[in-house]
Image 1 (cartoon, one colour):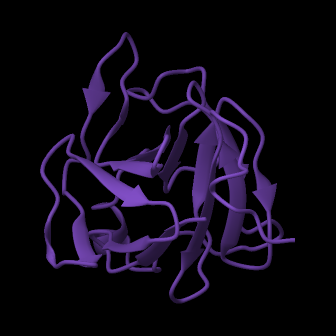
Image 2: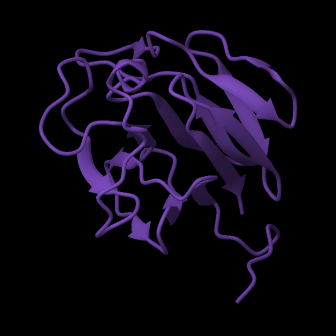
Length: 165
């Protein structure tokens, strides 16, 4: 069933994440996520429940706010944002970027909630590939309007499509 922005309940943004090469991602959330087909996740974002995406699966990340719990984006997959190149994969932060509710869609933040407060940007950055091509600033917020999308590239070459449904 299609949802219309004009009838969407206030305080909810829909988000779909997918990877260009169908690799998995790890997502941390204070809320629930709905895993979909391999390499895809569809979920709701509420104002107080952002989604954090990175390479670590399970356990605690020393810098990430401990309220976030790991959930597989592609359940049953042995793949991750790791590309199998130990050197390149170390360039991706364990918690790399955050997606949060906005009344006009979804906000992509180049960083994650830091343990003790504030924001921790990824050490090796993130490229925005579409709808424009440029390096995202540390802690930069980028609005993805409802009905739009953005494609980012992580430092190991993994490409992620983010759609604000």
